Length: 71
Image (cartoon, rainbow, N blue to C red; front, top):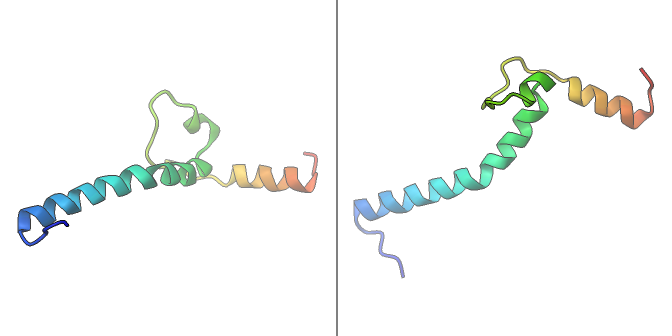
């Protein structure tokens, strides 16, 4: 099967697994951080990797919409 007895083989295997994990979990991370960004930050040409000014306005608007509250 796969011989991981050498240090270099374990390192390469770990590196490959890490890259696969980043590739798989980055969309989930992006989804979560986008929920806390303001609209102006969401639609920037250069995206940010974390919200500079976290906001709960999208959650507030979703809950108000679901409850049928008119602003």
